[in-house]
Amino acid sequence: MKIGIFDSGIGGLNILANMLVYYPNNSYIYYADNLNMPYGNKTYCLLKGAITTAMDYFKLNGVDVVIIACNTASTLFGEYVKNNYPFRVYLVTPNISKAITYDKFVLLATDNTTKQIQKNIEQIAMENNISSKQLNSKMQIVPSSLLAYLTEYNAPNFYINYRYIRDILKGLKKDYPIILGCTHYTYYKMYIASLGYELITETDYFERFNGLKMPKPNSFDNLSFVFTGKQNTQRYLKIINQIL
Ligand code: DGL
Image 1 (cartoon, helix red, strand yellow):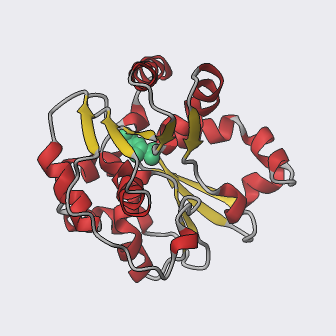
Image 2 (tube, rainbow, N blue to C red):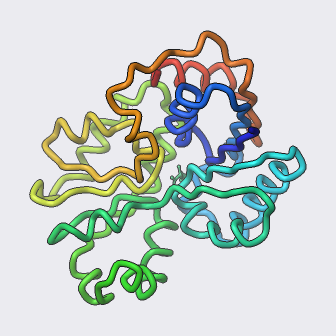
């Protein structure tokens, strides 16, 4: 099978790395729209154009499945892509269904994601069998587009951003879990947990493999990259190797 993975940058590499290990017989195209990153503060029109260009590319290249490994793109355009393209689509979105089982939770995501979630609040609440008023009172929103940018910029030296993360989290109670609603923040899972916060990450499609030893691939012959901006193949491969 041919699989396309999309993100504005390095955020989707965690998902790609898992796919390479657990489904090594597929071929992969990793599409990074690094020209337009960060997505968090771009206009709806610009992002729609960028997503259309990426999805058209996947269609032209005959992919069977696309994973939109970007919460911002999935939240804003997931339904649009599902309804307009021939391939199967998997979306990565903030895991609100899991979060509502708590009294309160924090949603850490880009500005565009948080705005879209507020816009769709009625529908999201309905899907989760609660009222929008209840959902609003449970959810504390912390928009943090800059963190995605800094993550891309400083990668793979993620520790450079630890101080900024502590600033973002300052004042947040440790009693409530935090949804990491941006794939770029996945790199801070361990760090944020070490500060004493509980985390809710995206739906874990690889959960069923837990406990199995991950065989590290010897080569990446089945992987190609598309960059809309700076060609970053070596840096991205370095990050994949770090994840594996
Ligand atoms: N990684 C993307 C997300 O999950 C967005 C990062 C960005 O470009 O702002 O939302």
